[in-house]
Image 1: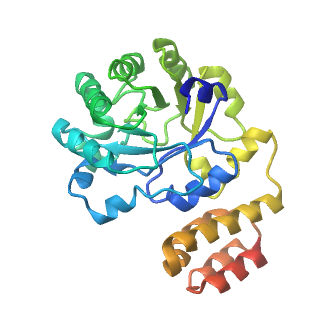
Image 2: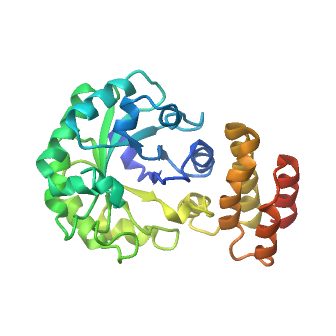
Length: 308
């Protein structure tokens, strides 16, 4: 993969979303417009212990190319060990360092957005990944700052660490997921570095073009707007709303992928997706109540066909 040529296409990324961006969802968005996908955030500590559940998170969908694995951690020796374990696995072309997760239990371990408080450490960790990884690319996903905006210094620290590109979520850690996204600050980050930059934060088909022009970003990363709405990638590319037929096709494809990946248990896991898919439809409450009690895959598929 030639990175410069890839970013010339203004690619769309699916953001790593805990509990949602598993191989089935990633396979669906790849089929319907996403250009690149990233694993759910994986703890470097858990990788080093070679926890079975953690190793399963490295599985990818056959449609995923390019695919990146995201890790979180702050202990430099643990990060090095985690990278050496990742070297044993094929199927992904890069490692992304999470420098943006605002969840307290992650921050308490000096991981995620806590790294924004120690930019020298952030740089060193990226250098360790770059030095020891046998994958082609290294990247980082950051926020604008911890308590206040410091994005130009953060972006430069990422570039100094040898990252090939950077994704910037347009909120500080203090802003959580509810503060207004500062696209102008993302533009400042773009102006501070030479590496490609991906804009992230409240991006949808309605504002994608505005975000591109405001930030000057080389790509966009879609997160929560894809939950219950994975056709957002097709909408951005086609400049129009997805048809009812396409939506139904995507929902059925997603369900098929869930059963293929999880087996019979995929029926129960898919309920949370159907709760999102059904928003805005007539009789959605009754549909949700009905599917909450369905365990059989064939019956669930019939109900999906009937409702959508």
